[in-house]
Length: 607
Ligand SMILES: Cc1ncc(C[n+]2csc(CCOP(=O)(O)OP(=O)(O)O)c2C)c(N)n1
Image (tube, rainbow, N blue to C red; front, side, top):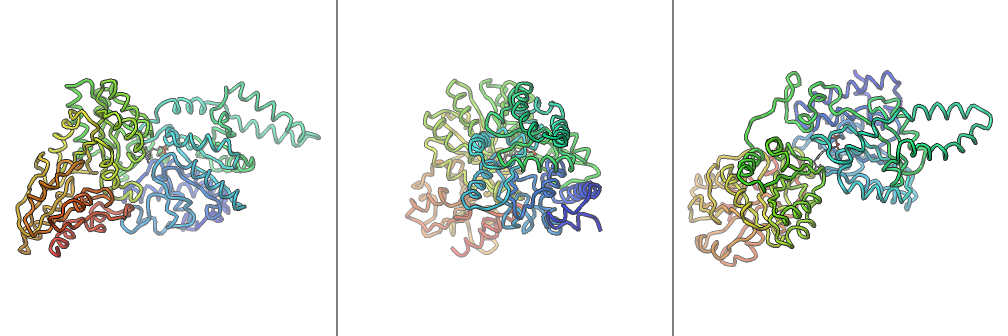
């Protein structure tokens, strides 16, 4: 029996000696590689945070103290140490444990996470609650240097410094977000990392002073001088200027040293930022060498490593199409919020480095920046996952739509996204984009349609979005650009949809045909406006209309049609008010929401 199997919580970690702690870290790494290579998931970030998590359990107790992980994708080690070793095999699977913190899974998970840069604010909220209720526990937030590029983190830090609430913010600095961390923050941290082993010297000094008679008073006196000297020598730390005590940098792969620093940070009883330097992918060579490739992985053979896939996806088709368009029009620029690879922009970056902008985790800023670019005559294309676009809502209205600026949103991962689950599903954009005045929204159902709709969006001369799903196309490979395309004729019932769900509608029509029911299938190209009168004319009298969508009902196309189409019975198949669909394969998620072919056929037969 290994050490990991004996660990059920913080008390078990605290009982280990140094050698056992090292052994525990080695076992955790092995287990991470074994499970993540089978199930897929966030490997490199978790390999990098092994010692830090063990040290956190060595000092704190997550059942009592509140430990927050920013984004939360690096919480696997935390789950392994907090009594979920047995369930860990089901990581990210349908019905299994989540790849993100989930308080419903365990009291050790302090808060749901999934989107970046919010942990400082959450920590401060919890600390305020602690003060006001007189509770007694520690609050700790762990955030990466990538997440520190997000403006929300600074809003939190700014308030935290002022609040004087005792909170330890751990900056897990590995120099990498998914790609390299960008901008001034990255340069700043690079400089901080080079500072001498200041805290070792300080510890020796303190020890020596406390041994001398009257040393304690002298030590306190020299603290003030030291602080002034330190900022003079090290210039002033940005964090100290914000009112936090800055500690570090400290080696993030040394449990003993980390534990010592965590205890010291806790003792200060004030806002502390502990700068910890880690190596992303630590302990698995391929991940150390190419951490971006191992940030989020599909299942792979650990002996071989991740083999980059050449499979075409909507993201890659978007990237290739944008390159072709940018070749002919030098006003076209590509913007990403730290998602260069995921959004298919690697080739664009290589081919047009001057017109490629990775702005860090800053979706709101990206939208406003696109507004500025468009106002001055450029053609910005902001490629962003639907779920993260939620961060840009105000900027889309204020800095884009109000001036009718021709900004193009390439909305990737629209709809249900699979094993990342609730925090990452793109199920709100249909509603919120349809609300933005003047926004044109295209929904390609195939690669061929995406290739035609992207240039259409770029020449529309208005705010525009092209919304496409995660992964590849289905059986439908045609290209129909008309507002309402009749993909199949049928007099008994009409099935209407757009985007990737067209495949389910066509399959549902096949199932219905097997039952002697003739279903008509209609496909929309755009969803910003729907010609209801025209639609009424193309639906046989007395037949029902079924509208299937992979989004919440509020603000959906079906909801609009149902409200305005008085001539026919309308039945809506969507997520209803359930915006939070649990993890699974995308197909399992469709099934659970009743928007897969079999469910659609069943509902159509009933109708
Ligand atoms: C608002 C938002 N935008 C984008 C992402 C996608 N994303 C997930 S992790 C990550 C990088 C985080 O980097 P860092 O905080 O340094 O953590 P590391 O994985 O390097 O430990 C990004 C961009 C997100 N989760 N939330």
